[in-house]
Length: 354
Image (cartoon, rainbow, N blue to C red; front, side):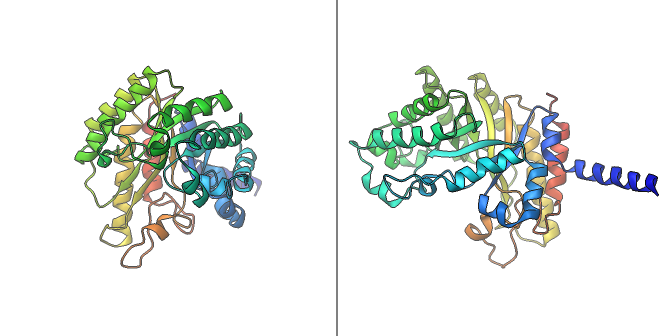
């Protein structure tokens, strides 16, 4: 009987290993993780156990944004962010901080108070307070998020955000310098969306703008270490992950920057068909994207935007018209692996060795 029990335990261990993303990724020199909400982790022990098995990096989905940390001008509320740090420590995971400067998730008081006279003080106080508190405990930061927007028609391609209107384009340089001063050990990333597809003209144009922005930062001696590509994919769109994306990643790497994929998921909101069909298309998108991305040695980290369909912001923000549950992530509502999980495992196993 002891031999049977041992064999069963070995089989169970092998099955668990088959979907241990963090372990498979580590053997390829990659960090694998997911965005989480600390209150969800605390309220759902089974989901928390799944995150522990799968994730070597935790990204706070909302707990480190301005509106969570700064309820009033003279008040910092670190409860949620502290809990993320504690959860990461308990599972020997890193933390990717998200995010220090963004045109959204701004508390009402900040929108009212931010202007040319106050902007530098507000930014300095926030970054020194937040980054300083977590110095040595946050591996990397999305310092500036979604700061490129070609539709705003600026010659430099920057978004006409409240921060730019208050401080000019130099707010980006300032944010990176302030973050580096607060924690010289952290890796600092410029994060943005809309860089993934070869067959979407505005994304191809945005890649060129992004390269100009990154080159300018480096030329000015700004302490930037990585480009963070969000990776929100659309299952209803033809997969356009090919030579153009591969070339763009190589151009970023040639600048001396690392590359992080920080918000990977596959939106099936507009995809017709039954669950089996939708799951197959979602999995194919994960596989095609990772096939390109993981061939680039500069890609050091991949995080999905959530881990299970049980807890995904897409079910609220992007519900399906037919009322069916959206299924953008590698584990379903019962925390079982979907076809996307198999595609991810395959992609990780075929990725370059460390």
